[in-house]
Image (cartoon, rainbow, N blue to C red; front, side):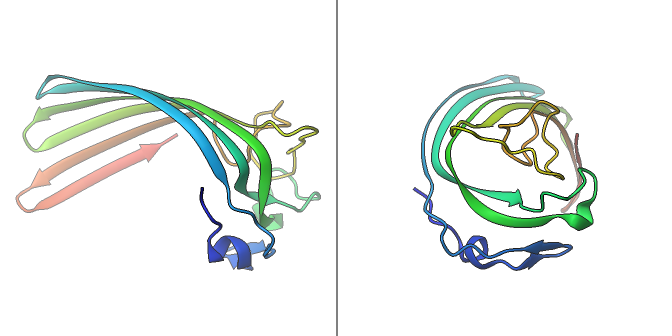
Length: 166
């Protein structure tokens, strides 16, 4: 169980976005399972994979409540934290890590996520939510595919880091 934070209940803005407080938020509950495997083939190469299944009741979600917002008009977004009565998030995470040099560590990752509102009569197609085209029941702001990269290079006591995500 996770209780809503003060920010989730009483937020009125977050930088560029306007917010509407919601003091009626309920605590979310989650039942889940995860299975995974990590294998180090040498100090130069390792592989990590995991899969998960999470069932939520009263999931706390930030939603764009401005029905007139165009999909790409970020200035029109007005958000509010609301409870989604039932949601399911299923996913797979894979990463490859290599350390070709003592000072250099590289990591490549891929995440797949299927994040759905499974409440009856769900329609989450408000503007600005970046859902898949046919995603009327897709949870907002949760990408289906995510690729990431991270490189760390150690120089004496300093560490340089470069990371990216698509």
